[in-house]
Length: 129
Image (cartoon, rainbow, N blue to C red; front, side, top):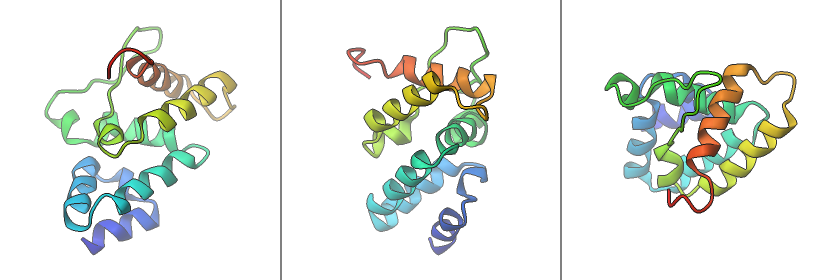
């Protein structure tokens, strides 16, 4: 458990294979607060949301099980991010994604824009997600 918290503090948790599983282990061991605060801090950093989405489509158990594929540029796709739902962070994350998508900072790559578009598309208000 301490290892997970140390990785989160060091900023290396998202680069760990199966990082989503670590979030749930952390939750079951110590409650929602730690992993939720970690996700809030990631989303709040300049490039954190993009990093989270990239890691989600490359490092989670869902990827290894074949449930998630990378959205391609120009493709109409949707990206559901279950941990954000489970930790009650969908609305604020969607708002952050919309800001990044429309402001288009210079560091935001085309792949990042595709991920943001797919994420926003899945969580459009009124869709029931």
